Length: 339
Image 1 (cartoon, rainbow, N blue to C red):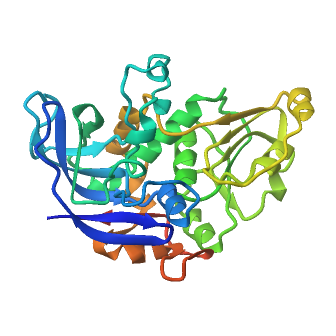
Image 2: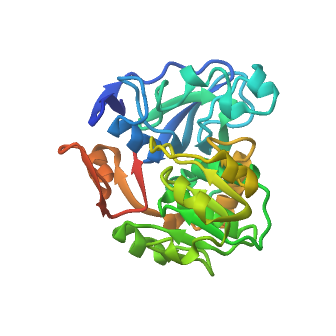
């Protein structure tokens, strides 16, 4: 049996029985999914703020066991514990050949959990290129953080970094925490900004050594070299708060609009950089989790079986019955659904 969490329409999710994928093609691997994290993209899809194909199986942050392999597969074998890189790239289009595989021209029709069936299911089939073996001591739930961590590492690769930069990370969600740890691994100490009282208390004890958390950016205004905005709603504040030569990295898929003043950007030599998905950082992210450089066990605050998905979304402030989200109802950092 292959139970799967499907998206029908905004706020309408259903647990259905889907056919088990057919035997894998020569270079494909069939994975028995064991853990999948609820991502901010999933929340956006449920709210109707991020477009997904009606009927698609959600989910893309996953780990599991190899169930079957195609006859040409050499990297893994049945029984191997693996994590899945869900960012498909063909390797041949102009974007792939110019080292931008995160914007592969085939992405629109091959995006896992958006346009193509994802991993909130018992089984998922993918190409051998996109599975990586994980260390024996790493749980499936911990390994599911590999994909979001790889996105954070890619984001930092887009910047001009020095460890002495005064830094703020806006948003204490999973991506905000992973950015803090990715920065800490490079010697950074900074401040996280979070307005949700629930997450403020939760994340205070999880921050890297030396990092602080604050409910307001007032104390750090006009003194920053780097702002990482994981919310998509802090652009206006960030640009006012950056020193000359400062950088803003924005990764949140938020529809909030803001006004830009080109003269301000030019006169103060400010940079705005966007980043999505990962480019060549998945293996590094897996290694950091395998070696404990990232406290994945602590960051995964809740594990629930797949059939308790409503409770999982509720822990993140999403009431599927009332069709509303409340930041004040957030009681978790990372929720992982197991199967």
